[in-house]
Every structure is written in structure tokens, then in C-alpha cells.
Length: 135
Image (cartoon, rainbow, N blue to C red; front, side, top):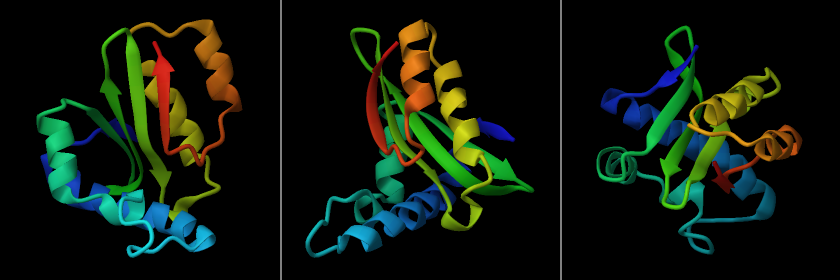
């Protein structure tokens, strides 16, 4: 089930983001010392709380049997732009089409989705962590 998270899910979302992006850090040799602002190291409960409560980002998770397996956030910007952040899936839950389900969910959150965007998203890789998209 894909649904919007609430504040009580923030700690679990932080853990999902960190664990998901740690695989990228490991692959490229990123550490907290050489890349302290990388998503796997910089995501905190306070940061997500700020994004939820102050920036009013839409935060959505993929739940399976009450456990969060995937996550993304969406910030609506000026000029009809949206920013997709931290699209991620737990390493042990990958290759189960969770990312493929989350990506269209983010598109459905837009109030206006041009056909060109649908074509771009169809070709996007599921390792996408940050994109600015015109809605």
C-alpha cells in the first residue's frame, strides 16, 4: 500500500533513507568524513520534520504488512515545478517493483502532468534520488 506518512513514521523514514543510500555510499567510497552532506549521512529526524511541517512537503511511503519498504518526498515549488527527493527502497526489498510503484505515485501527486513528463519518467532509472520536474 502506498500512502502519505504522518509524523509518527519519521524515524522509520530516516532509517529507510539512510539504509537505502548507504549502498550508494559503499559503492562509491563515500564516508561521513569525505561526503558529510551525502543523503545516507545527512538525513535526520529533525530535517525530515522541518521538511514536513515547515516546507509542507508531501511524504509518501510504500507499506507492506505495516512496515515501510520505500519512500519519497515531493516539494511543490514556484513556477509550477515540483522537486522529487529521496526516492528509495530498502536494499532487501529491491527488485520487487516497489520503485516502479512509487514513481507513478509521485506523478499522480502533481496537479498537472504534461505528456512529456510521463515519457521522461518512464525512462528514468529507479536509483533517482533528486529531480526537478516541471508540472
